[in-house]
Image 1 (cartoon, rainbow, N blue to C red):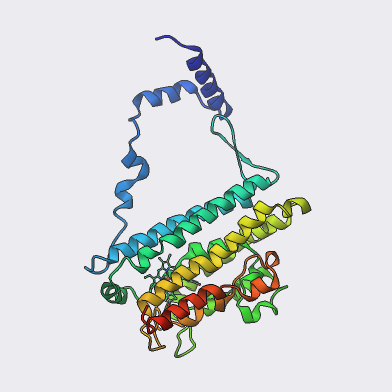
Image 2 (image 1 turned 60 degrees about the horizontal axis):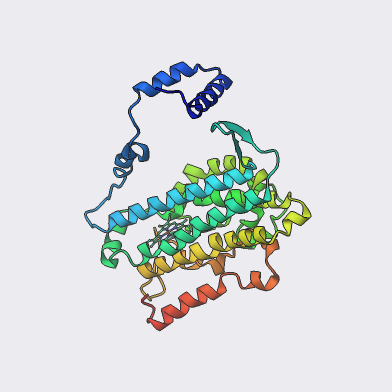
Length: 338
Ligand code: HEM
């Protein structure tokens, strides 16, 4: 076999790559001789993936419910993956694919391009929520749901991690306490985060089991996560840019879109779905374990805004209003049966 200049060049690159980490190229070439070719099913772990759906009932539509939650978890995970890279200023990878660590400084182009990805993932999740809203028979849902109590999508830890990495916790404090705690330590702010007042049992005002279990499992982990991500969250990253970079229209557009995607559009698609399945028009429909979901889920009522400084007073005043009005008028039009 002829050793062409192309092959020689690749061998030199490989030799440099392994020399840099104190390894011997010949042993790795031996490894290539013995290794099986990679196939799709092993690489993607198809069998493992398709073994992860374990319905608790025989209702066929429960599978849709499980798969769609899993898809959402995967997207959430991709979003955290992108946010993490922004927080750490972007990876430097050598020509031979080696990880050379993190950049000293965050480039605005990198910031924008990764925010675009997060927005793309959130837009996909929002538009695909119809798979939940219209993709299951209501009769089946109401039955298999009873076998899942007290578990709820409320217990999605990834959603909380995204929030902690996106902005200062002072913006996520329960609205009535937001002003009082605006200068507190971020751990105290996390202890008063809005969702700890969600999943409250309507009749007793006590925390639902859904919330208690979630706090037992994750609250400490969220504090640890906040230790890592609060000092380098997306708002801190934006604030640390030069004045001219902070005026970059594309960057501002992506940050504002992220705020709307996470705090209005996705919550609204989700809320419409909850209304579709849970609202019966009697006004006392209960969420998981009898929660206060009607008062808690609409974006208009929580008024979570990651980047209040990027919105004018009117925009903040009207946060989520247009969309909530749409849902409410839908309810009226259809005699409260959406
Ligand atoms: C038929 C589909 C769904 C219904 C009826 C529904 C219903 C609810 C309800 C009633 C709540 C309030 C807490 C409770 O009572 O459990 C809630 C919270 C939540 N659900 Fe869902 N959900 C659905 C699908 C999903 C999906 C696919 C996800 C994605 C992981 C999800 C994620 C969440 C999150 C993150 C919360 C907390 C929201 C917040 O804190 O603002 N849900 N859901």
